[in-house]
Amino acid sequence: MIQFEIDTSETEAGLIAVSNLGELMRPPIRKAIFDVAEIIKDDAAQSISKMVFPRSTAGQPPRQQTGRLLNSLKVKTAKGRATRGGERGYVIGAKFYARFLESGTQSTGKYGKGIDPRPFLVPARKRHIEDFRRIVQAALEKVIAKRLGSPQR
Image (cartoon, rainbow, N blue to C red; front, side, top):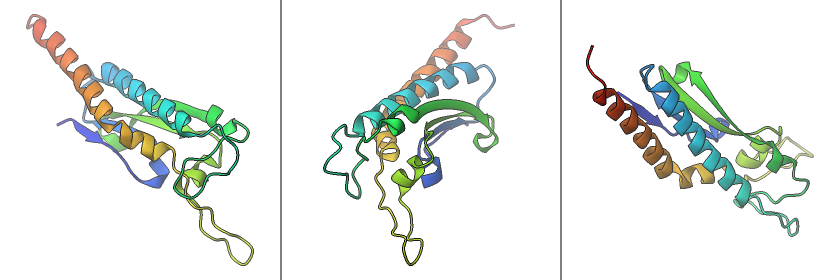
């Protein structure tokens, strides 16, 4: 059974995945996942405001200050044991502070004040869950139609 996985944990903010794929389905599904991850990346990038002041508040996407976070957004695909023979796609903020902005931080004691979350990846992914399902379903249908159209051996 093919399983759509939308992981909502903070550590996997940009994950999309499909499980239990046969080898025939792997390449088109990998491409479909990459395409959707690109859509999510572009959406997340657009949510990062170009207006520096006033600074973003809790719950709003971060505002661009240097452009490093925006330029660090990348898409990766991979096979994974966690997907039981499937494919995973990630949108990642390669800058170390991307996770802090996405999920926030806790207070670190006497002098440390936590950072409230300023999510930009999770909301983008949530906006494109239906795109993910539609694009992966189209890829599956294409593979199945091609397979059924070929002569039996």
